[in-house]
Image (cartoon, rainbow, N blue to C red):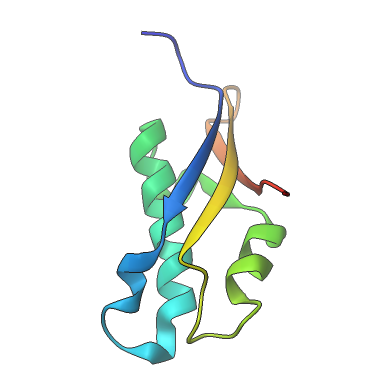
Length: 89
């Protein structure tokens, strides 16, 4: 199996709509971090989320994050950090 260094994912965020409305955007960021960590085999602490991704999730407020988000994930082999960038349409 080849080692992943760069991938594009569409992450479904509909799961964050179950539960309280008052912290959905924060849960969406945690879900993105967990999703990327699982797919790249690193601990969640090693996932770095770009500010564009954060602003895209939070742009409609804490109660209405997007239902899905398309991201580009790049792994830095030297540092072991995985970076998450927003894919512009």
